[in-house]
Length: 270
Ligand code: ARG
Image 1: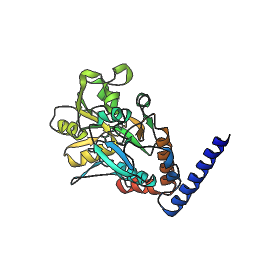
Image 2: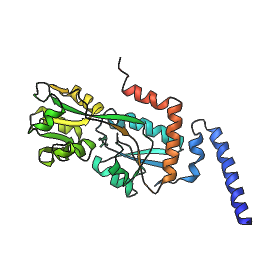
Image 3: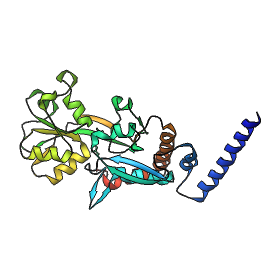
Image 4: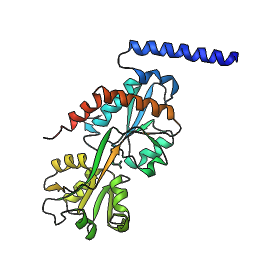
């Protein structure tokens, strides 16, 4: 009983202390008050795995990785009193790396899927994405049905949801393995499309817009394929980190920070 009381008192004073610190630092609010509860791979750091060829979520400006995910993760790290460290890796290695304890978070315009949820936890979603179809401007492919019916070759970024959907069998709404060409980067698929090696690319709509802008003679079909939620992948054992990140995301949504970041990169149309 005595020990219990002492522990309770200990927790209380830590809470008080943390309360005081979080009052002192304007940026570290409630989310930081939980910081005693979670651990990260390297103390004081939040290691984020991404694949930085996915504008406007993550891309290079000179030798710096910038974009929506980078800004949101930076703001979250700041709330938690951590320094954000970015690791640019192959997209299809991110989930395994988070699961294996190599990275604290995977933040890469990453869609929440049932299958990925078997390996990692996801934060609350902070953005939505749509899978869209890019074709040549004069393509005879006019919609998804035409793409599925024909004998067309479809390019995807390896391991992405575009890959997962399109490589599934025709009964499951895909074109099947035989018609899929996989690329390490979305833009490599778009370059292959421009040069006529493949007939279409299925990729998230915002990068699709950026790639179409920078490669002549392409267009995006206006039949979107699916709507998805983007969230941060977190190791299943680190529930405390997930909770702290969710708290930070909530605060950053409520105070308008996240909407402002998204709006800066994707100005609302109209
Ligand atoms: N939303 C898609 C997925 O989760 C594609 C994400 C690709 N992200 C990237 N940074 N390359 O599978």
